[in-house]
Length: 134
Image (cartoon, rainbow, N blue to C red):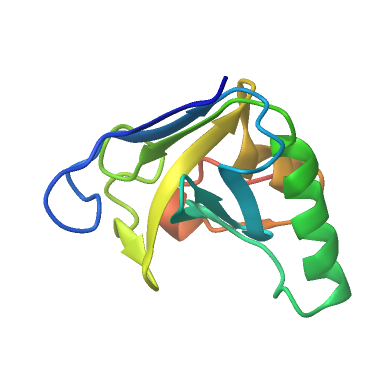
C-alpha cells in the first residue's frame, strides 16, 4: 500500500510544509529526473544546497543513477525550504518551476549522500555551509 500526503497551500505548494511518500512503490510516486531533482507525487523537487553535473554528461548520468539507488524502495520525505531546512534564509523556495527542499530517503539526507559519494558539489551559498566538505 502506498500512501501519498501532499500538504498544499496557495499557489505552487508554497504553503506546504513537506512532501511525503511512504512505501516501496516501484518508483511510481518518486522518480529521479537528474542528479539533483526528484519528482515526488508529480511535483518537481530540487534538492537544496547542492549541484549535480548536467544530465547529458557521463558524470550527470552517474549522479542520476546514484540518486535513483538512494531512493529505490525507500520512503521519501521532503521538507520545503523555509520550513526548517539547512537552506532556510539562504535559498529561494522555488527554482526553475521546481520547489526546493531537503529530502531524506530511509533516514538518509539525499544531498549529503550525493556530496559524500562525489556525485554532487556543495553550494555553501545556498546551504550555509551545511553540505560543505573539508
